[in-house]
Length: 136
Image (cartoon, rainbow, N blue to C red; front, top):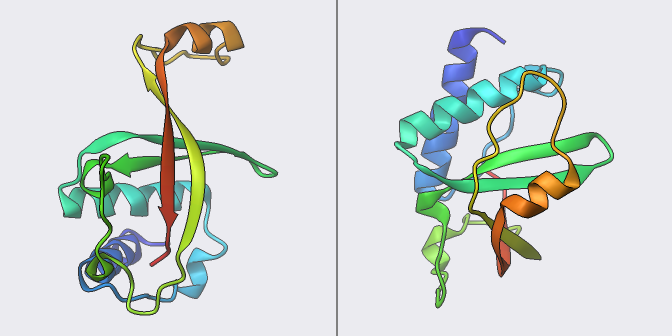
């Protein structure tokens, strides 16, 4: 995808988020490299002026997936979800999650990952969380 196409998708996502409407992805996005998705996500967050509150990390058949959790989308307990925040035709899902507060930095490494012991020792606390799933 060209830089202008990436910028247009980011702009469409921001509009969809503000209006609660859904959009269809451009066909060329379906075969785009992962880096294009990261570029779109980065530009969308920049346009929203969004701060990152944390990261969602999941293991899937395709490998490890990660996505930022925007501070503006984080609801702290006790929380209420107003229907105006949901898409006009909601396809809402709910997932029970575990959230980990990392209390010790895990600095980037030039190669290799972290051991289970290194990650466990960096966890400060564990919390119950609920994720509301929706897609623009």
